[in-house]
Figure 1: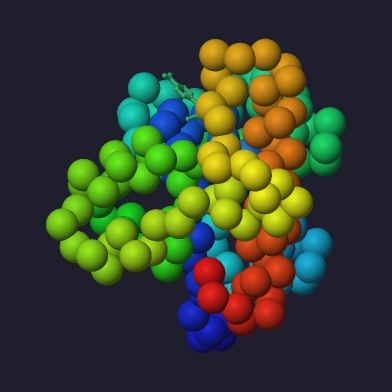
Figure 2: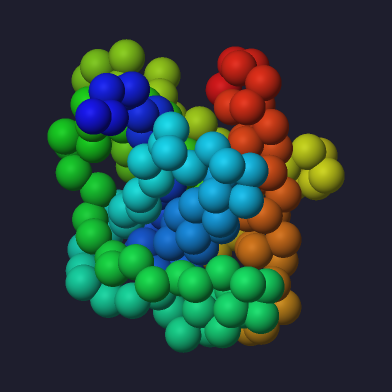
Length: 164
Ligand code: 4NP
């Protein structure tokens, strides 16, 4: 019987069809490639509900497929219960952070919320993962560059038991 408690990671963006499902798919692969996947649950959610039930944006799916990721989660809206259900919640930008902070008065909830870009060790100047939704192919590629970098930095910290 599996009795080890898993660490639960949630990736959050605005629509849950571009950045956060990409982060979910990339993180799952990074953890699997390192043989760490049995110890983690990985999910994603959006602050809005406009795309509930949809697959990720076809542009992000295509961009991800070129890099070996299958991005096939279904969009869902962030729920207040997610603050309790997850150990760490990673957002893409300050707007995401602010919108989550408006959903709770509990300081412990917000202590779980981190900026994903802060783990992108090879992009020290980047302050956010920009929303590519209204952009072009280059914007999707850049978002994925940052997400891959951050997923790898995050996995390093998790593997080494460092602070998140
Ligand atoms: P995401 O991008 O937050 O990275 O999923 C967006 C997708 C859809 C919308 C906004 C951002 N939208 O307004 O529908």
